[in-house]
Length: 406
Ligand SMILES: Cc1cc2nc3c(=O)[nH]c(=O)nc-3n(C[C@H](O)[C@H](O)[C@H](O)COP(=O)(O)O)c2cc1C
Image (cartoon, rainbow, N blue to C red):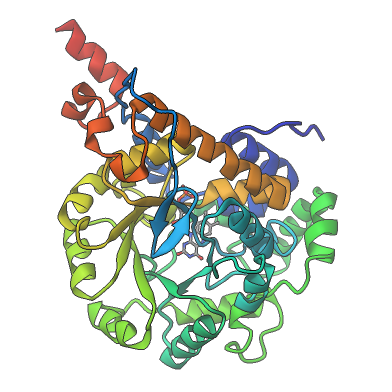
């Protein structure tokens, strides 16, 4: 099977991941909800934000460093929580934690990660900051309390609490590939897809054990295989969660609280009122409700409303360091990335994630250099092309052409 010798972009890593993973796993990480319109819109919307080139500014000292959630970062970026990352590469979360620590950015461990918090914590080099921990509200509040305590004991001080998953979205690729079904026939379909990827079988299925939800091990009674864990988690999603539960959570967690999955200005204000230190503007990477706005479109209003009170992070469709720059120009303090790091992990392991992050840092540095800003804190609307800002986030080229032709 042909492999790219030198993957350069997130898209290249996506292709590597596609060649390496069994079909149902690749589609699980790559796909979105419904017709995947929001998934596509997330990516396209960043591309429509035009930047303002400036020249003959002293850019001999450009600094991409910043602080996110009180932590020094080499660039304004953190790895988003991605469930089942340890199915994409052997002990995947531990590999990604090492890569993130070396690159100087935070790694967020999902509630449904394969590696347990302690394993991920131990993977970081001595002296490196601990991972951030992502949690969903579970029906069993005792389990929530136990997980918070486990996170605190593992040194985590930033909790990413996901609020946009009262129910899992309709992910049609999972239906087509038999991932959403139980029974002999779908199992056979998955087995055929697994057998087509012997490299994955050797790396993950044989040498990557145990394949269970590590951090939940003490919570799931009798859970030994992924099926038992998944059944427990599915039964634990609580569509009855409201802002009152966030008040309860606030009382339980002494560290920083980031609410992830905010797409609406009123919800952003409510998050501030609930005492969150930050929010993540997110539509779960287009995996929940197909048809909601792209995050690049939702970001400016939210950033204007609460950006001076809490840290505003954004994710969804950010595919390179220039998109990262665009997010900051639209008012974010930083971004989370999901698929790009998991593609790089699946395609190239720890080294793949390291390469990806190094390349994004260079792109960010280049964008700063050519827009004439030397510090991350100075990136803002001034770096947006005024002409395209006036026309908003419409398809830039065609709209611009129309205006020029008038
Ligand atoms: C395969 C996959 C699994 C995910 N699992 C979780 C999760 O366990 N918890 C969570 O809060 N978000 C999860 N997300 C959403 C990401 O944290 C993030 O919001 C999203 O991937 C950002 O969009 P991007 O992939 O376009 O960068 C997942 C996303 C993907 C692609």
